[in-house]
Image 1 (cartoon, helix red, strand yellow):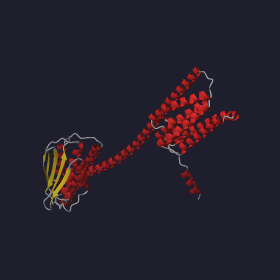
Image 2 (image 1 turned 180 degrees about the vertical axis):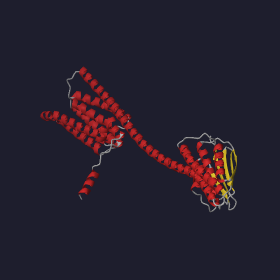
Image 3 (image 1 turned 120 degrees about the horizontal axis):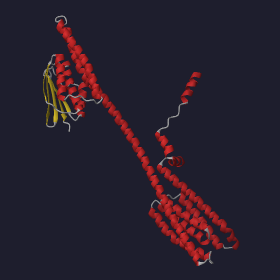
Image 4 (image 1 turned 60 degrees about the horizontal axis):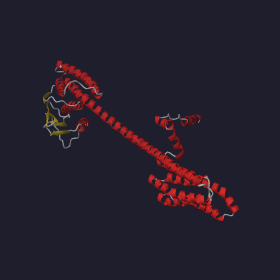
Length: 443
């Protein structure tokens, strides 16, 4: 029982996963991005919406705070002087501004619907401006404009609001001078007015520049996320290609081993079978055949080694014609069969050279084993930009309608198609077999 508990404890205490380059990059190389992800979420659209929402809440809180400061500054004095008109204007402006801001923030999300409430807020801010002097009314006006600039989806809308707000501010500022600052000198009024209007212009430009940088940042961040997704998709596609390539390579290796070892071992088997039949009547001939079989088996080992070199990309120096003539010579020496040929000296790629040599070996092996053929005819020539390979034998033949290709012929047909060609088998009972392969020439 204790041993079981110990085992469970060891299973739970697994070592932490090693840090990858991607994790290191997210935390160290881009610390600001990591901070934003932890604060606002990892989704790029969700991150932008949350950041804008938090900014609107901050502006709303500042707006309410400035309203309270204005009321605390003015209400007591208005009550003492019994200026109920100004008192009513301030209270109405504060109520309208707060309600409009709350409705706009919590209920209306589309820009064309919120535009009406911005006009209402601007009017309420003008009420504050007309009845209160100091910096608080200007701050209120600036906060409303900032909120609009931040929420505007187009720069033209922000520019239009800026142009619309300046005349209203001028009217409000003039009413403030008339009702609140009646004794102010003209030069000082002009100087202060120019300063305020310049501040509003600089405020507009600063907000637009900041929003431009922010939108560019979010656009680049979104592009980086898309690139990361594309990278992962490409990696998955690459892994799939690697897996398919490995499968094709395994099939090709199986085909190389089958063609190389199968052909030679067929010769060895035929020699040993012939030696068994004549060992009592002609021991000397049987000995010669066993010696030839032994040499053929050693030759098979050399062929397997050569196949390994071919699969590793090392090419031989012999031409296609020389390779085929060597195969014919070795087969005739080892089996005693007759192979006549008409071979043109054709230059082909390494892949087609291996395929045609293996096709010859497979065709001869099948003719010897299944058709009991004793004579073969091989024709290899180039005609109409194609390579034509024809191997026929005098074996027993077969019924092609009920015939199913074995592993060797199936791989040969698939390989021919992969090289852009086709393989055809023509045969009939007691009439031998004809193997025809047509391949396109290399460009």
